[in-house]
Image (cartoon, rainbow, N blue to C red; front, side, top):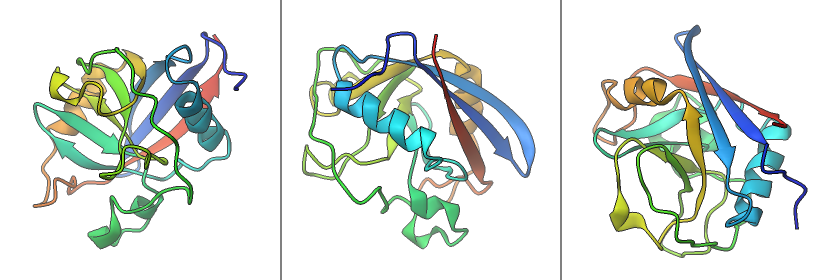
Length: 170
């Protein structure tokens, strides 16, 4: 499965109020989660993530994005969307430490789709329950800015942080 090389990177170019907020660069762990890496790369190359937001941010924990519903300013459905299919879990021994990229899911372990999160703090209670498939190699300071934004009661930032995701080979 997959043609993603170990040198493949994703760059999340982030804007807020139309102004650049910075970039988060991610390297993938194809060796432990090849289906999740292939899925993220495929969705990125199709432009699926472009215009989506980080719709859930919890200080001391993580920032979550990748929901197509977040393209709509109506926040009521943010966090409910996906690509229309599910990816089987690929739990692995990589710990959920600061900077780790992991897939969000519903209660069903095999329900990941497009939503992902970046840990801004060590979150080992998630180990073996969510699929780690990459890590931030630069831009954690951007993630730290996002996680500390003012948010509503559902942890959705009041200010939209939109992403454009591009894939490059190392």
